Image (cartoon, rainbow, N blue to C red; front, top):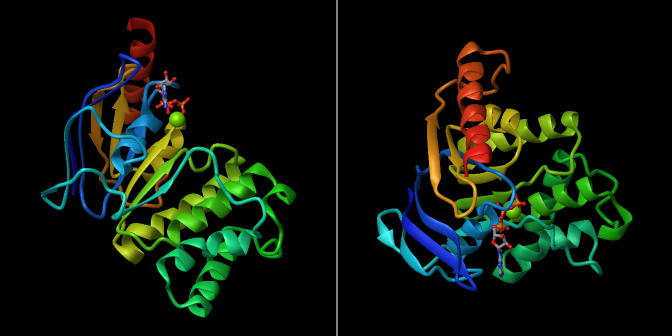
Length: 246
Ligand SMILES: Nc1ncnc2c1ncn2[C@@H]1O[C@H](COP(=O)(O)OP(=O)(O)OP(=O)(O)O)[C@@H](O)[C@H]1O
Ligand SMILES: [Mg+2]
């Protein structure tokens, strides 16, 4: 389990994270949803040590940690692919850095690129493909880290609804296939309801966790499931209330 207690972060004296408490159970798919600018990317940056926290505690599997940079693969909001490398070579980067067996990694990366709908584009460089394709490649690269924790910052933001749904099915295999623990950020409530075992709603800046739902429905889920529709209503009410109230 990842546990964050009273995590705080300010930039130039302005609080962005104002005492964030949350738990991500091991092997779960936790989704965090919240208004733009509320501090979601900052939260993942602090968890991974991209920037240090000011206060609060972080632990993984019961052990306090400075950050999770060694345990987590982090897909940042912008894709950060290397422009001079092909999609396949971008996806291979984690295996190269870790010194893993390259022929095996090449096979695995190739398979994942195909599963993401990128067959035939393995040799293209990032500027030759669309934003959504770059995102999918960045997701493959993230999976290639082979770390127990996956942190995803709006991984599907530039994808159409159909491609999104296909990738959802793929992501759903991760916890069961590989025992990964996932924390994902999204703006898309439908996406959150389809994927989350635990759904967290963030307040506007400075961020706290304002609401939490456990979703036990088996996946893949039906969007018209009455229980999901009820939760959807509650989440929307909280998000709208936050926008009006704060
Ligand atoms: N390195 C930084 N220096 C100064 N301010 C920062 C820095 N990083 C983030 N901020 C500020 O922190 C606040 C939260 O930003 P953040 O990117 O975490 O929001 P977000 O919830 O991810 O937004 P979005 O949904 O639009 O991606 C913003 O006001 C932003 O300007
Ligand atoms: Mg963000």
